Image (tube, rainbow, N blue to C red; front, side, top):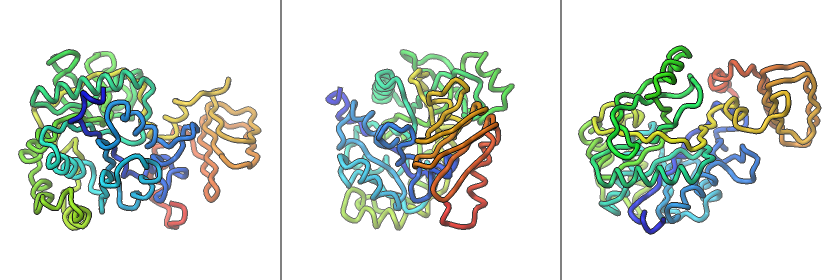
Length: 359
């Protein structure tokens, strides 16, 4: 399979903070570098190993913030150091995708890019690789920008949705529209119609194709990054990125390109996917006891407790009684006790904390 993908490059996006997983995910050690599943490997390690079934490590790149470069090297020692792209500022996902395309296109004009987050869980890896391979083939044969769509299992209000149009190939569908995160009634409507999939943020396109789209739809970003393309893939690359990258427009790839382009396609996929974006999603993913609790503790004493997420990885005795639908996260310097129904507020709680020691 690797021989069939010699022109395929994988980019793992690993620059986020994971603020909704606070207080376990911190500015200095975000969730992609945590063994949040308790399997002995970090999320970014699991992501990289998944793609190594398809391409050689030399064709896997990581886009991350400058402050996480050493962490990437520690977690993924099999990758060449030149394959770690360090962003000097957080300018959202459009600029980093443009930078990646420019860098890889300069190395290989026939390159096809697969872009994926570093912190998602995919249980059905064979189906995932099969759908990625299908998308790569379609991108190589057509003028197309592709995204994997996740076949929805419930009317979830936490994801953006993709409205599928007519079939353009073997289970490849034209995208009619992208929809923002809906309310519950709208999500139920999407599910009943059967033509909507979740937007997982996993993209596949030729480097030349996405560069053409940037030039047409978001020229400012390309103009800024193209000041001196001879600096890319050289010893001067990082200094060049440090100079020009902060001047790019701060905008997502969805708003800059995908919602404006006419050649966007999706492949509906059943791959056992979870974005693990919140404590609730981790609770839903992990095995639960008879009262629907997830208890990640060495010494728990839990009674009259149901549907709770309880985490404490040290030897502390954790005693909980009489709680329902709560998140309890015990770190060495922070204790979080929060209603599950209000978990979307955790990101704002983190923002409100002024003492940097706890961020």
